[in-house]
Image 1 (cartoon, helix red, strand yellow):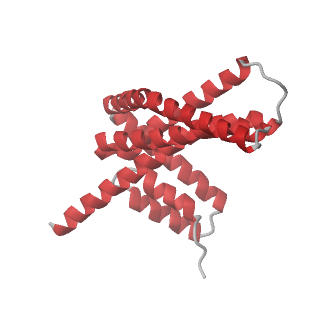
Image 2 (cartoon, one colour):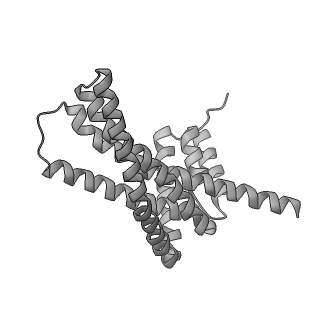
Length: 212
């Protein structure tokens, strides 16, 4: 039985590479993998192809890229207020329940705030990813990825800054690492919301083409 290339790598290649040569690139890499090229080589080619494709797409559509990032951050700013309010409401309710139920210990209290904030940040992120993809249907994947990367850099930078300037009592190492991990929730949600929208739009266009 012939070996199959890594499925996740192939999925990334099929969804994150734009342009008419996508299918031929997938076929070429698959064929070389069958000829004996390693899995590490396949992954390197996939990552390189995705980065080159996105860079070319952004370079060829700079105004569109700037608009996508600007519209994304506008939506991010607008939705941050209700998301923060909802997260605080949930956190206070959870803490009240912890007090009345006798579960007021370090980890439940510590997790109540970050997890509620991450939950609503992820919901807002998915909505913004959907918006960016809808507003840029011809380059949805590239524009959503670009905005998602900008959110990731912002969230990690802001989290690192807060951890460096805030003073707190000694905590377990896992508690200090948790904010960094949770900071990835919003950009990942932006990516998933945008990709879902891009895939739906692509299927709709394929159906229209088939009918005609």
